[in-house]
Every structure is written in structure tokens, then in C-alpha cells.
Amino acid sequence: MISVSEVLETNKMIERDLLDVRTITLGISLLDCADTDLSRVEENIYNKITGLGKNLVRTGEEISRDFGIPIVNKRVSVTPAAMVGASACKTPEDFVRIAKTLDRAAKAIGINFLGGYSALVNKGMTEADRLLIASIPQALAETDFVCSSVNVGSTRTGIDMDAVRLMGEVIRKTAELTADRDSIGCAKLVVFCNAPDDNPFMAGAFHGVTEGDAVINVGVSGPGVVKSALTRVRGESFEVLCETIKKTAFKVTRVGQLVAQEAAARLNVPFGIVDLSLAPTPAVGDSVAEILEEMGLERTGAPGTTAALAILNDQVKKGGVMASSYVGGLSGAFIPVSEDQSMIDAVEDGALTIEKLEAMTCVCSVGLDMIAIPGDTPASTISGIIADEAAIGMINQKTTAVRLIPVIGKGVGDQAVFGGLLGYAPIMKVNTFGCADFINRTGRIPAPIHSFKN
Image (cartoon, rainbow, N blue to C red; front, top):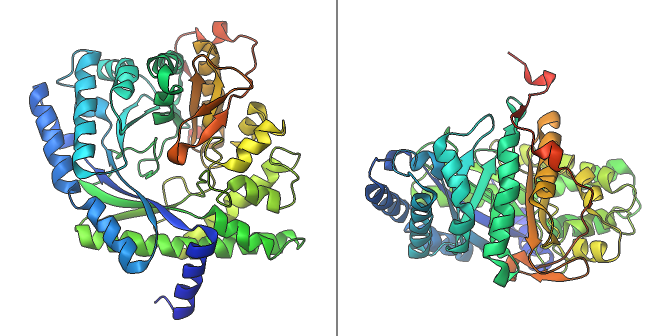
């Protein structure tokens, strides 16, 4: 039972430290929407999403009002669209029709984003996967709320390098089709290795095929709370530092569990997981980089940054699993550049480079997230960056991802402006030495030896 003191402490975290529930995400299986007739598939998808999701936004608003907890986003994730449209879609344009149907359903129920315009190509690609991947640039350019993801590898299967090569080209094309908006289409596209089935965070959310017909997953975010707690133990030992993060993560997870259980009960949908990811926003004081600097770094990117991030991620997970038996998704710390003002400052000060960010992804929740790069970056270089991140995930048995934005018409020293939670980002320098001969090899990077655990 939650005590009065816990309630009062939570209220302080909300009012003073920007604690919020970042998202309630309703996962919906669309497997039963498949058909050989595309029009029927579209009708089935629209009816199922609007039927199950019609009360999602209202329920989130009611919970926020009843408990005084800010709930920033209400979202939906669906079964990877490549599976749903496999029998009906014969061209990339057919899949674009599905994307537009998803967008129309999202607008009808009033949510912020819908994820699952996705393909899972860890080991190889079906014809439907190829068609969906080819359709991504047009689909993201012609929809408003649809988010896309492609999983190109895993620890158990290795990395599909044909898919990696294709995704470099897809990201370039998506950037070009949305060039008038600083290539924002790429902000809705994630390339994964070891993607989880129950991630509530966009743009990488999809409803895994091992999930039930519908599920409620909640993502909680509290970097401001952690930073505030660490100011009170400034200069203390690493043991005190770790205990403070762990205890704070416990409290934040309890808030997420409360909201998740309440949403599940009110919507009559099973409760899935709480994702305790410290996801920053452009607001001052809501920053993962500020946490790292509060630990003792002059600037994020300085020597010691990777160690500090490792501490943060590990203690967040330890605190979370004490608070809930159903912690899942990604759960740790996101390090997106555009969504974190102190990250932006570190880049502009020259303290943080893509190479340092890549090192940090070895110990964070995801990977290279919301990184704006020069618009003339070759597709092969983008694929090389994806391959590097996928290799980190494959070898280390963790989720890694890439959300790169080649901003057409802009270069190092310029800024890309996205607005809202996405904020703005300085264009970061990319290594200009080529890797085309490596990327153009066909086939698959085999799974590492430690993948064989049967």
C-alpha cells in the first residue's frame, strides 16, 4: 500500500523536478486483420484500432486529473505492418495505403503517435519486408503520426547486412522527401538490433508477435528527479551515489506502476510492463546530461562519461526491478542529442562527438538517438554507422538503435529545428572516410559464439 509520505514526496517530484509519465501506450495485435484483399485489410485495421483505442486519450486525461500525475503522451503500437500486409500488398504503394490507414486511425482516436510501421529482418527479408522498407520514405513523408522501425539484427541471428545497406538508402530518401521540414521524416524512423517486443517509446514501438491481443505499457521518465536527488549527495562516495539513484528509480517506477494498473483496469486491457527510461525533453532541468554532470563531469563527453552513464543505467534498472515485477521495454537512460538541452550544449562546446556517443551507447538504453548529420552524408556512411551500432548490440546482448537525420541542405555549424518534444539539434560532424566497399558486400554477419546457448 502506498503511504501518505510517498504521495507527498511524489507530488514534490512532479511540481519541482518535472516527473511525468511520458506515455501510456496501447499495444494492439493486427494479426487478425490480414487478408488477401487490401481494402479489407485497411478496413480491418481502422476498425480494430478505433474500436480498442477509442477511450485511450480520455482515460489518460482522467487518470492524470484524478492522481495529479502529468501524462504527456497517449500512443498506440501495432503488429509490424510487414506481417499484416504480406498477403495483400504487392507494391510499395500498397504498403503506403496501410500507413495512411494507420495515420487516419491515429487521428480518429486523438493519440500523439502510432508505432509499428515496421519490419523484423534479423536474419533475412521476405518480399513483404522488402516492399515495406522500400515504402518507408513515402509513407513517412505523407503521414503525420506514423512511426517506423526496422530490426536488422540480434545476438541470436547476427546482422542482415543487406538490410543495413538498404536502410542507409531509405534514411537518405526519407530525408530528401521531408527536406522542407529539416528532414523530420527521419525523426520517425529507427533502425534496431535486438528490438524488444514491449517498448512503449516512439519511434521504435511496435506490438510484438509474442504479445496478446492488446496490452497497456507505460513509460515513465524522471531525469529531473534523479538530478535533484544527486544534488543532495554531491561529493559523497560511489556507494552513496548508487544508492541514491536506485532509491529514486524505485519511487519513479512506483508512479508508473500505479498509472499502468489504473489504465489497464479502466480500459479492461491487460497490464504489460513499466518502462523506466530516463527520457529527457528540451526543458531545462529535464536532462540526462545534467545528471552525468551532477556526478562530477565538467561537461558530458569528458573522460569518465561512459563510466558515469554505466552507473546511471545499472542503478535505474536495479531500483526499477525492486519496485515492480513487470519492468520491461528498454528501461535505462536515453541520450538523444536534440531532446536534451545539456547534450546540445555539450556538442556545441566540442565536448561531445559521434564517436564518444557511440562509446556511450555500449552502456545506455538504446543508441545513437536523434543525431542530426550533414545532408550530404552518403548512404553508405549512414549504413556504416548503423552496422557499428548493431554490432555493439549483437556482441553485448543489448538493444541498440540508430535514429540519424541527414538534414538536407545543412552542414556542420547549422541547426535543425524540429519543435515540440523533438527540440532542435546542431549538425554533428561525421567521419568522411568511406566504407562503401564494406557495406556493399552482400549477406549476413554471423551471430557471435556466445549466441549459442541451447
